[in-house]
Length: 113
Length: 112
Image (cartoon, rainbow over all chains, first blue to last red; front, side, top):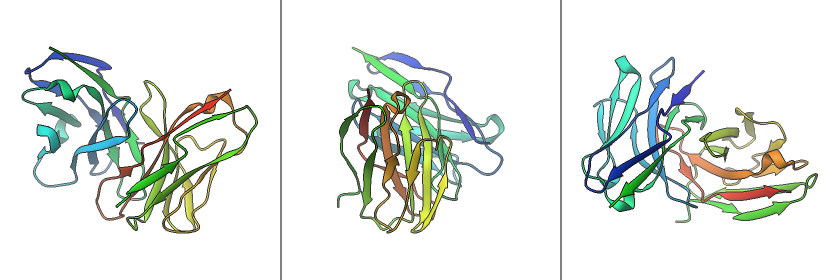
């Protein structure tokens, strides 16, 4: 069965500092991988996705993620965090059939000035 | 372009009551699904559908029913509400060919 682990429940970074959010997945086939962001009281917005091809994917708001098959990881990065990036971030793995996404528990990002 | 629309945004139910959460999408997506979000647990799949007339259970289906009579609509029915169903519910849709899921704004449900 698919599973996703986000080991960090909370992360606090200073504005302007770099960010890396960790995501490890378990899936038997080629995974479809996603990062979503959720601001308080809002729905989920897609940051980026990986289906195939280049293992370094670029997303919106200056985020990128790297797929490493050998480590079963899909970590999210941003070189310089802005206060508006404070939110909860979810990693998800999906199969090609249906709309069955398995989400991690989420990482809450706090940004201090 | 409305995307995925959920109604209502907020709802309070008494234990044992029934209700239907509505979800509609205008993108002609084949795949639709319902998730519930609880603190520290991410989103968990309740039911999903791969097309009109076809539904299947997800990870946490007990206490919920769905139907898909049209491509656009995918309502979620709570048969007899329980406090354990207090949660935020999200509907999502996706085109079947390798695209991301689009989410509605959510319904915050409280069962007292």
